[in-house]
Length: 67
Image (cartoon, rainbow, N blue to C red; front, side, top):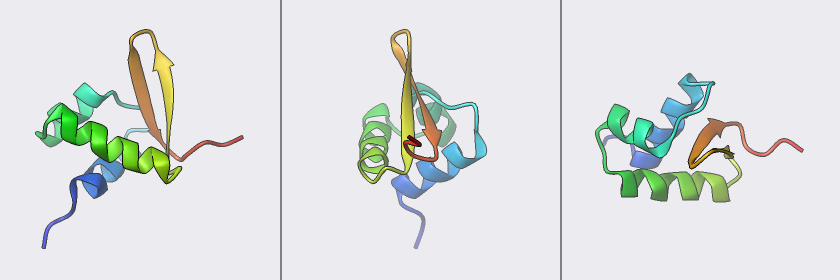
């Protein structure tokens, strides 16, 4: 059985330490932006990623909120 979309997004974020937008993740994994948004929301809810707004875009990073 293959990996879930959430697992694919997590792996991609682990490899890209500079952060990625939803569009970049969508293009890289060839899945819809909506699917990426759902996966990111689940990862953020589990505090596995952190999000930094940059202008209109939001950069997503692996590692959760470090306070």
